[in-house]
Image (cartoon, rainbow, N blue to C red; front, side, top):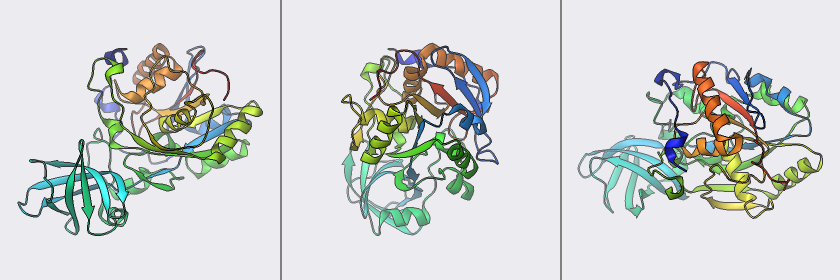
Length: 348
């Protein structure tokens, strides 16, 4: 398929630059996959769209304050570091922006207090060794890694709002944004409905914002992200299927976790990197419905959603969202989508 087939026009003013005052105040565009019908709702209506037999699956990753600014010690040249993955107590792989790429042995002074040394390269990433535990340094001195389409500096508010209320496992450098809409009141309403919840972990990488630089989707090499799906979650899915319920993934990251774990035809525990790239024609094995934010034009995440809800139906829904002035991307509004006919085979 051609990447241009997943394009749509988005006015800049619809890109949300800040969270709403109320975490649960987002709108919810509902797309019925089998019919393509649309309904304008609110995220607070989600419990009404769920059955007590359903299972809601959240990504419990925690965003780390992964961005650090500073300079090269030897030359004074400005640098900006975005930690992509913590690889050891004092080691990490990171994106480094500088006028000249730092070579091995280059010392960096970050935020005036953090010291790191470049050990080498790993593809586009730089291997860094810090003078103290990486996670501690980031929590004390780092900035929240807001997406490139948010054109302001991060604030103290972002430390709380660019983080889900159920975040538990530190390691992401971008939020699983569909989860940002859930607050204690909405979670309580879901529990009162009798809906069970489960957790998976996918540490979202900065690659989620990288444009697809090829014309044909089959030429795209998907970035790797670390995933964990436990036996407990697999058991919850099995019980959900047995009672006739639906597996509802909160966010494309939860979708990728479950579908990675079910890639062999049966949902089994999984821990490790995934490069799963979902495009139209993909046979979903684990997910029946999803809650998701609106995604970038020509992005891998939009392709995943089109594979689930139907390409024509999803792009028509995006055109509707633009006309109705929905807010887009990380701090934007949400969708609730059920699978198109043929997107899913028999239950796992």
